[in-house]
Length: 200
Image 1: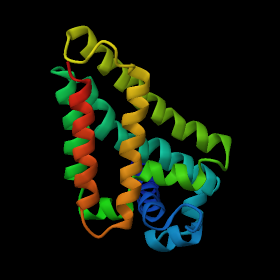
Image 2 (image 1 turned 180 degrees about the horizontal axis):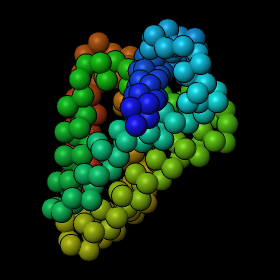
Image 3 (image 1 turned 180 degrees about the vertical axis):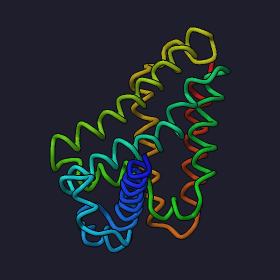
């Protein structure tokens, strides 16, 4: 049992350090050697848990990146309450709450999409799965808002969902270029205006 716990701890250490290095330096430039140096583990420990960097990349996407998006952007959409208020708190308050580290490095999922989204079907499928679940949660919330009378009935739920995701991911990337939050404040003003327009 102790050996199993040690093995799981090793796996988590590799996973956590890999996520951090991929986030800060990019997937392509982060080698297995760099990961093992950062973890102070042997290459044998790496290959005991992962066949190669590709498998590790998929694990980081499905276990670390997906959890981050689910916890921050998807789960809140299923809460009860006014649909527009939920959209505002999820998209606007979330953006304001990011620490400076996250603002400087952007969205981990978006970074993966931009760097390796066109490289391999397995990466595409793993990243697309997150986007599709996010989109489905938004459509469900917008549809609920329409049926409850808080969102205008002529709003195209699918189009609004794609717009919200795209705009949010776009500003996370653009913010990396700036030293302050002025660009975020402008985005927040624009998104607030859009949400007020779809409100009934």
